[in-house]
Image (cartoon, rainbow, N blue to C red; front, top):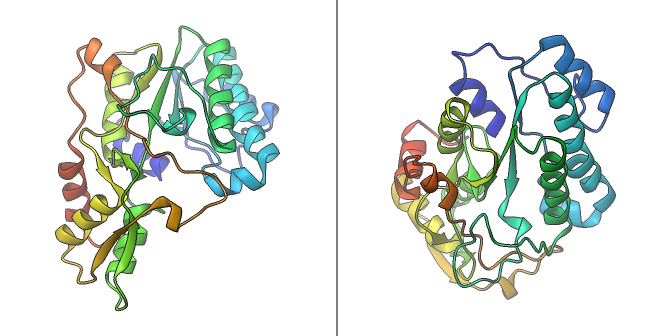
Length: 272
């Protein structure tokens, strides 16, 4: 989903776009050969296993893709002299803070997904400490999906009992367009290390759904519920909010407000 948006936003650049099966980041030879053939100035690493519950049931696969795979990408970028921009997640944190997490907060992932993504972060910073940027994002949606917005849009257009949505988890709903625009700025003004790149403002999943339904004029009623009413194999963080302190330190403009980003996304046409 993010890769598709980046491909569109970066159309003015010379791109080599790859996915499975032509390039496999878990195969060091595969990703290194791709970099050697293209000789990129910058590698943008979007590949990941993002199924949080799937990572819980397949921890070895999660670590192979998100941990070892990210190390392979970093080593391939280093071998051809490229910079690296990679994407990580709020799940590297414990998720129980009362305030948004900053880049200086110590990670303490509570899920296999978060643990594997943190391993990837650490590997990238070890291999390319001065020539890599890790952008942590969360609650992502964008053209083509799959995403929470796509699921709620589909359910909101259906008849049935009121839709129950969790109201005790808070985060920053974030569009792939916003992340891609930030990536463009990072190409021009590199920031080494970790930055947070979510949209401004915060909401619960319930509040996010209410806004989706309002903007899209969807008829179904939505009511709040608790996380405890919807147990999942992997625990969900109560606090996914990320503070953009490093972007502010470097004088970058604020990320878009999540309400505005969602409105622009829904104005692009039917969600599919």
